[in-house]
Image (tube, rainbow, N blue to C red; front, side):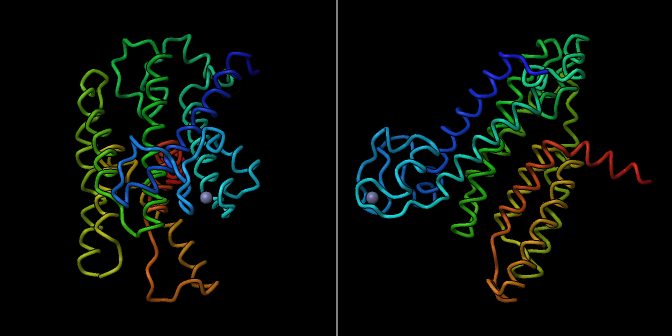
Length: 295
Ligand SMILES: [Zn+2]
């Protein structure tokens, strides 16, 4: 049963996600080029004409302006709309994962709130907050924090795909979110040693691989996984890297099979790792329990 307030919040978070996705497009374009992205107007990358508000409505501008620039008629890459859709999807995912009682009035979700479940039982990042904080507020803050994580992962994915490099500043963002978790940890029984171990247990073997097998991974990938480990803890970062390598491997085989890349050519591994981190942060515990259930 879905309630009206739930639908309203759902629509609002989707729109907010798309608007933030639109801003992520600006960062994806400007960060590797060293252009500041807080100030300055948006412009068409082709004719550099300044864009008006009507040109920047997420997804809709792309669909209704004929998929071309209104000023120079250069085709607009579908990627801009894709990032906006992914922003909206991320917001909806974070919202539904951490606020199911409001989103869908799921029976178990509602039950967990009324029975006074602690925030940490509602989701991974909820463990950051003192249990005394009402569960709904805690879950809202957690959903927002998880959404920030997803935004950073989107930035890493697209920038790495474009430039084959992961800006350190983005890994620092992830690590900082992990440190915030550890700082607040003592209140909620946050397992901080698991997060310190997490920073090394995947990144160190990757670093050795990168040193001894040139081209296996970039140093950017190593730093990304160190930050992800600090954020997720050792259990979930191992789940993340397994999923990442699986996705990256399948993609690599696809590239070879379709002859898009030769055997010796490299491709950006960051997007696959980011997908692993995203899946693990939402479903890692579930996946781990399912897997361990076989033994
Ligand atoms: Zn233009």
